[in-house]
Image 1 (spheres, rainbow, N blue to C red):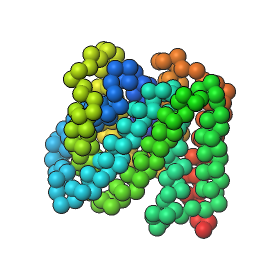
Image 2 (cartoon, rainbow, N blue to C red):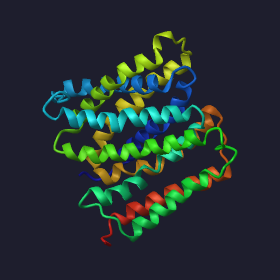
Image 3 (cartoon, helix red, strand yellow):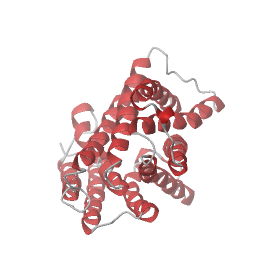
Length: 295
């Protein structure tokens, strides 16, 4: 691992912006496209730069190898289901709320990792962090201006979608010996293959007359927030390690709230700010707890 430089922090910020910008782009895409179509095209456009990189680096894509069932399972759990649930939920809630709700992923991961991994056991510090973080999520649901009886189900779907990211990450440990680019390309390919017939059957996207802004948002979402963001993640992981890359968890909800306000003029209430602070503090404490061995 090399010494962290200014360029590394700049790239980390860019990665955070790419992932945070996904939320308002999903919102814009929902103006014209259904959630299945959004999920499929996001994966379809996302797979292009990853496959090109594999070709450039002569990395074999093993999507249809003997481990195809792992790639297919991870593609469905880590891409298809959460992408669909998030797109479905964002139809009725602000994109900045989605950014905060999705920030619960590291908190959920800390809890589930205790039961499904050998070296990520829970301790008192982590428990404190999880409780603080999720208290922020619970508090967010008390904001009647933004979450009410008309969209509370959509908010829960987004929160539920974040859980699938965690489960997909745990499944990825089963093939952790393979190159990241190969794994990402393979799960993207399977995600697209699974979603294609479902999308064609239920949403018939050929009947759409989409707005230009929705189409551009969807293309951006796939190429930049999915494909290029993953490639940038690989670069950071390789040169700076997992701990440094994991700092995006602090930045994504902050940028998500700011971008939602600047691009879509979404409301930022006092409860949104309090919830955001609680979630970020919770994530920070959980990560600190990861360095302490308290069984």
